[in-house]
Amino acid sequence: MAFDQYKKVIKKQLGISGHVHRLMAGSMAGITAVICTYPLDMVRVRLAFQVKGEHKYMGIIHAFKMIYTKEGGLSGFYRGLMPTVVGMAPYAGFSFFTFGTLKSIGLAQAPNLLGRPSLDNPDVLVLKTHVNLLCGGIAGAIAQTVSYPLDVTRRRMQLGAVLPDSEKCLTMVQTLKYVYQQHGVRRGLYRGLSLNYIRCIPSQAVAFTTYELMKQFLHLN
Image 1 (cartoon, one colour):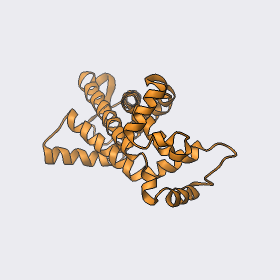
Image 2: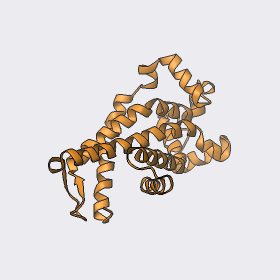
Image 3: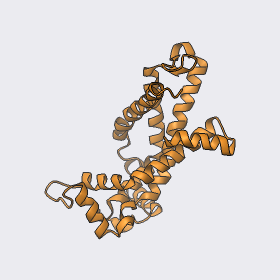
Image 4: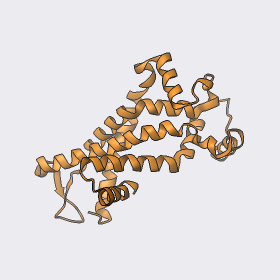
């Protein structure tokens, strides 16, 4: 929703269109989504990190109460927000940018092979479903690779006092430096990237394909 709105605003107010406005709108949409949903992500990370037999939080509502009372009120829910915002801007930006670029190139270069008429408007060409899935998966992989070190930073900061070395991970720059010095690039900043591909590639493929199909079902083309 935010992506389409930002696209219109950027085109109308700034007069920017094409690849750049897709990148800008995607980044802004990602940041908007993060700010709105970050407290839920914080609680999810805390609950997921708990070890059996050492439960600090009894459930979602209890986790919200504990973080609010023990970690400084509302600010406790936004610990690690900065690396998340900085990471989400390139992630969402490159995700929308890559998908949109692949879509426009595909329909321009091989419309008969890759495209078909839209369900709601036969004059508009859209990608075939399997091509949508492929383009969405590629977009997810590229976006994840670009932003992954900041995702590692976000998770470390979100865990906060749960980790024994939390005092060394108070700011985004501190955390990045610490992870790099202790573990390097491959085993630190990009640790777990291959597993993340297994999650994010199908997730983005399905998300973009569903997005494109829903636009047709709701007659938005």
